[in-house]
Image (cartoon, helix red, strand yellow):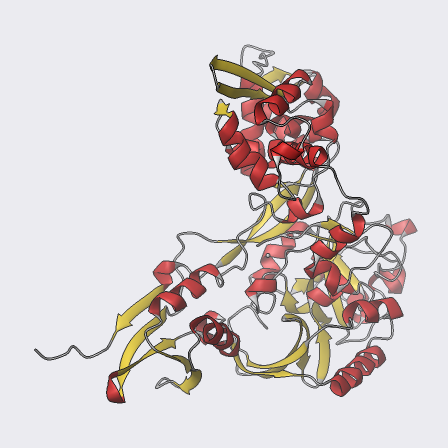
Length: 564
């Protein structure tokens, strides 16, 4: 339903009385919601807006956004939750489980077919006990969080009698569609799940169809993104909207005691080794490492004079004595870091603060996304960390299959692992790889397959680069009005999924000029008009905040040239 771009026509705020009525309506429709679920959804300070949209097929829908994030939409007088709602309130609808390879096909517009559904029951209860049209969620074998929302094409009884053929779920909203990316600034990646994988049960001893009310995953939201946040919520099976949007408040609550300047400096040093050092070329001067590594990684301002070391060189020499780094003194006053001991026990055991994880742009997609595609990733597990820590990666970080292959080849080459036969197909592993793989002799291809089998599989939406799009480019024009007054007119915004009312507010505040939405000569399209020549400002907002490629913006100056 939302695979193609839609037009947003209006954006209205709900009053407090309307919010109460809407909350009671949701509670009556979805009776499986607990009080905690409702509390997590309807937080005290949440701002709920109703956005009226027209889909590509011409349907008029209402989308209910909580702090700009679409949480419900109204289709044929029925209020349906989005995947964001299922991440917050896991009990809201029952779940059907499918294989990971099916997700890209669903994103291409296919419905979930019965052969791709895992049987989680026996007999007539093989597919639950639901009527035709029941709203359900779809999750994956490797991840219990919802990746799609839809309705049953047939009743559970008809699904059982169909012999395992035909459609099962008609997909309405899926991870990666235009509704998921309705407001790019708050779009989130699908949460990761490090729990035991869901597996089809033996037909002779199958439990009932899985629902999240029976077994809730411990919700864990991944960063994106500027759309990647990743925070483990301890001792809780639910996440609230505040957990998703405000990691700083959580960090402030967790920090019960103030750290000394020595502790802040040492923490920044470890963060720099974990996150920043892999982007720095060794050997590196002390001053450059401090400026580009420690200062950027520090959670609080650092004053070296307030530490017991007094000087940077004293601190780094102390770190060298402990075996964290190797240093070299070329001439007087010129010291360099020549090596980093990533296998040191203290570095391995150091846990990055959650705020640093959420701000690590190297592991996040550039969010908000403009032109995106689905990418398959693998999460580093405890079993595989002994290998990846040698390349400065941490548990929970996500890698593509290409990156994993590159790491495997580099490790084999760097450690000169010998070939076991004349054909040079099998290699003899060292102790590190033997502990992970459980074999001494293996081919590189099989080593790669065993590694990814021990890692959690997941998916993310990432930005496409250098890809042609069929969307009409955004046009920014400067025109003259009466009295030689200049106005800036922006066209084709709605065709590119940008909400005019939101952009109007941003431009009005940034330019400190009057803005208005005017009708376009083209049918069913509107334009944004700003007083004055605002080409540079609008281009900056579109490229930096909305991540629109600069090549997708056309700037035209239509002002009349003055006669000589």
